[in-house]
Amino acid sequence: MKFQSIIWLNTSEKSIISKKVIKDLNLEGVYKRLLSNNEILFSLCSDVETIVFRQEILDDLMNNDNLIDDLVSSLERFYELKPLYYDKHSEVSNLYRIIDILIVMEKAIVALEEIRQILDYYPIKSKGLVGFKESIKLISSSTEFNNMKKDLKEIKYIFSKIKSVVLSVNMNVGLRPIFAQVTSIDNHRYKYPKAFRKVADVLNNDPEFLGQRLANYIPVFKVGRMSYNLLEEIEFALDEHKEILAQFVGTYEKIDISPFIRLRDEVEFYKASTQLFNRILSKGLPLVKPVIKEKEGHYNGTFHGIYNINLALIYDKLNINEDIILNDFVIDEKKRFHILTGANRGGKTTYIQGVGQVQLMAQLGLFVAGQDVSLSMVDQILTHFPLSEKDTYETGKFGKECELFVEEFKKGTKDSLFLLNESFAGTSHLESLNIATQGCLALIEKGIPFVYNTHLHELYNEVINSSVKGKEQIVSLVTEMNDDISSYKLIERLPLGKSYARKIAYKYGVTYEQLVGGETNETRN
Image 1 (cartoon, rainbow, N blue to C red):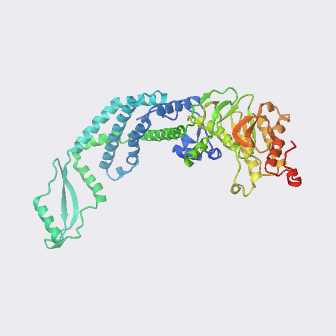
Image 2 (tube, helix red, strand yellow):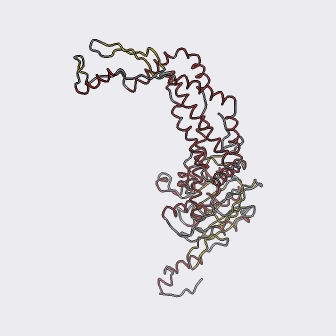
Image 3 (cartoon, helix red, strand yellow):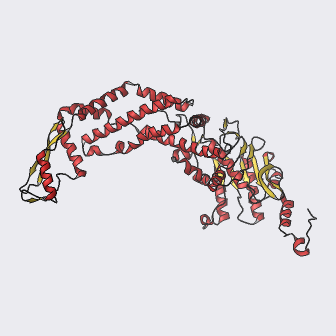
């Protein structure tokens, strides 16, 4: 039984997503919800065809209520067969193996025909599900499939004739069984003789029979062993059907249900995705199918009304009713490098994570958190986020951050997206500014697109005033402030710089004049 995957194409291209990137983008909670295997979640699609392939399947599943649940329910039958499919009962009894094959075949046939009915019932349009539907139709109408149903019926008929077996038992002088063997198979059910029922009635009142105490009577076989031993005996008694049974095993013992077990995992990925998206939509937040553009010599994208999906999940979990602010982001041949500055707790980290989340989820073939998104693919997403102290014990935090930046820089290309969050903040201001400037100049020189969230307000001017080629492509983004309160909107404008720093100091009463002279009115810029 073969089918086309609903996750990958034969021509799919992909690159590996680092677990560090998932952590830095705060997507660990989302990944837990997606409940899938690492091959899917940690593979960044690098071809448009695969992404569109998945998007269309998601469209079908989102537009057809109950389709995903019906598919999962049917495919679960194959998953339940997994222990039988991989078990080693054939080492115990050949007949046990035949029984396993019968169970696998019967349930697989039922599941296959059920899946065909499901796909016929729903008005699916995606290339992936339509292709899967055609594969199922081809299998279920094939000569091999019909022969399998016929052979299954024949073997079940042979087994259906077995109504009882005659078990001959040798006894010792104490009337204890010492040896037992199936001597014949009957096509009628055994009826318990009245005489034996009377003996049983007697034993209920008196545990002695024929002078023997039978209260601790030991049966011929323990239940666990009985199945194996009886099967071997029955197999011997079925000698007249030996050729048919041998041919049946030879034909069907290698029946391959593993593709359907894998398909169940793939469908689970889509199910978890649709559940996540429906939860987000129920909160009134936008989701959009991103338009994937072909590369035009450089990475580019237009993100309109995006937000951090993890923030949405936190709000949902804590039942917070505050509005989530939507932001925009543009990266093209004129705006390839971005420096974010502004007030602390102004949403800069949340914003930079949101940009990375949109890019990553788009290249997983999923919908993204935004109103309108079009982008080209990146070959990799690189991150440089603050480290915890426990990760930097030997080298020191600042030294380790420098090492990691160099590693990521070496991996970066013109088709990468590099996200830096408060990088090089673990030392003095002047040292941080100097190293951050050198890092930005190198990124610009190498042409690696980046978004840099920093407290270094002077960084933008340091880069603009340099002689590096490409500096005209750098953009300054700042958190918008209304009456000294962040609106969590990122706008394109020059850094606020020293004048804003003094304004903040004045707000908290820590200017020189306020501290020494008691000045209460701001008179200086």
